[in-house]
Length: 215
Image 1 (cartoon, helix red, strand yellow):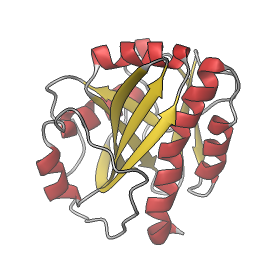
Image 2: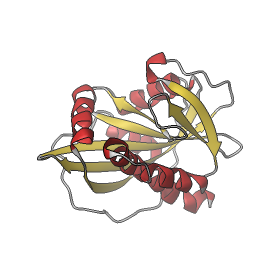
Image 3: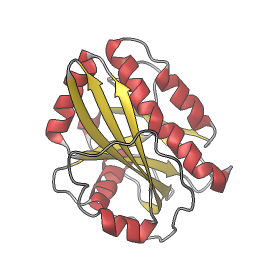
């Protein structure tokens, strides 16, 4: 782990989209993360999904408790996005990764930063907690994304986990993350269409959360 502890509370808030209750406790280390990096915006969301996505996400939940989403920004201002070999051609998004069951939230942030980029970074803010209700094919699943803003230190990108299947990276400006979200939300097909709508939300949230600071 090579990030520094930076205390910088977030001063923006957004209304909840839906009043939902999580059917499981929040992850370990949430209180420490809030104390160090500020109170996150909490937002609840609801998605109607098809069978393929629900089957896939049941498998996801069997292996992780929740996820971290990393809004990683270089000193010169660009945000890092990546693509993987299983994605449709041209699809990029912010890095994210699962929180193992029982894993400390900040440990998961540091691990995912190292595994996906090989770089060091400094957490700036705990931006948000996005709780998603996923409903379809007679099933209801809940999943939580913990969103962090990280300042990357300069270095050579070198993903450490070959199993991630990362093929490449791009840099985009904060406003350009909206276009990334639009691309995700416009994906077609029974699985990729649902996946793209779900993944687009965190990108729009990051733009909203950081625009008062960087806009």
